[in-house]
Amino acid sequence: MNLRPWPMTVAFLLVMAAFVRLLTVTEGHLDGSGAALGLLVGLLALPPLTGVVWAAAGGSVYAAGVGVGPRLWYHQFASGRFVQVGALPFAVYVGGFGAAAGRRPQTPFRVMLAFAAAVGVAGLATVAVTTSGLLFGLGAAALICVTSYFADRRPVAPLPAALSEFEARSRARLTPVVLAVQRRDDAEVVRLTADVPAVPAHWTDSFLLALRAGALAETATATDAVHTLRTALTGPEDAMTPMVRTYLAIALFRAVLRDEVSPEHHASVVDEIRDRATRNAAFARSMELADVLAAQTAYLDGDWPRAIARSRRAARRQPPGHRADPYAIAALAAVANGDRSRAARYLKTARRNNPAARLVQVAATVLETPDRSDGGTALETPTSV
Image (cartoon, rainbow, N blue to C red; front, top):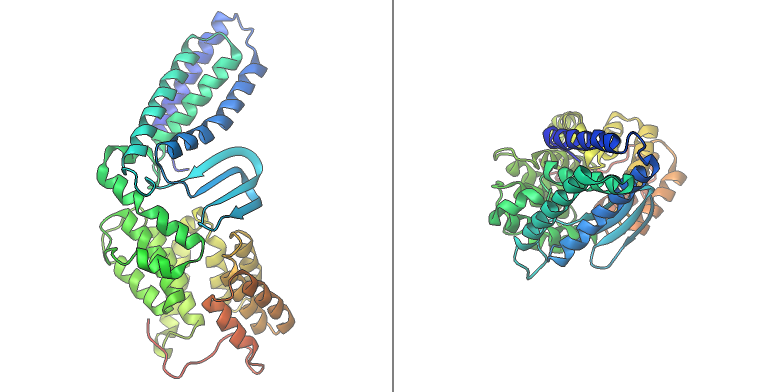
């Protein structure tokens, strides 16, 4: 979570001032275990309660989970919504961008704003007047959680959108597209994003164009995806421009693997992929795409063992049904490394995840060509990107 520092600093100072007062009125005999328990209960209970309020107010929900760290359990529904459990169960979250279909776009944001204000006032009053360690912990947790909601400066943070009907409507467009992406319905993604302006006018346009490009790479060509992303980057920068740049590096790599790059442009495209992977590393880490970019760079460098290792790691970070491309890259790297039996195992896993993925078809073609060892094929009329 990307937080503005000053709201959290103010909350910290208020909690510390209340803590000193509590020590004074209890003559130093504070129930420390009660305060710790109250803080833990509050931090665990408020996020899911916020999610319940969001959904009850008509907000869309595409994800729910508990815990952080390595994924222990994951289930995706036919709608594209999913739930998951992480290794360390001290975080609860609900994912949603805007209003559900048929609901007024700004209503859930206004309800969230009122809910956060009420909880914040209650938390502040509790830490100010209580002499109970347990209640103090609960109040402090409420103050911390609510302050973090207002301090969150990510584009998808819900509370800032409460100020604008336009912002609320823009965000409401995202959820159906995200759900289509999660259930791998690429044709539906292309359909839902058909009216997005080629040059983004808002950060949600950049987000949708990046998702559209990913779908075009499967339903059309990687070159179409590259052109979509290059055009998007001609506009002014916004909060999702790093996502567009990262997806461009991935689309260019797909174009190289699928021989959609003409020989005279091959070297410059490879250099661009490496450069974009380096410059977008920080954003890629935040989106769990760092291993994808690292696998691409290793593959282009001919470091086959590292390409395999990073592809496998990237696949493990993806939900079921979205692991085909990393395993296909691992299969191609294994072929290039001369280990065809290992490549066949990776290809089998990739097919099990998504047999229709274009990179899976590329890997299958390479494996069926016994005299090739460079992990690629050649087209008679390559297309320049």
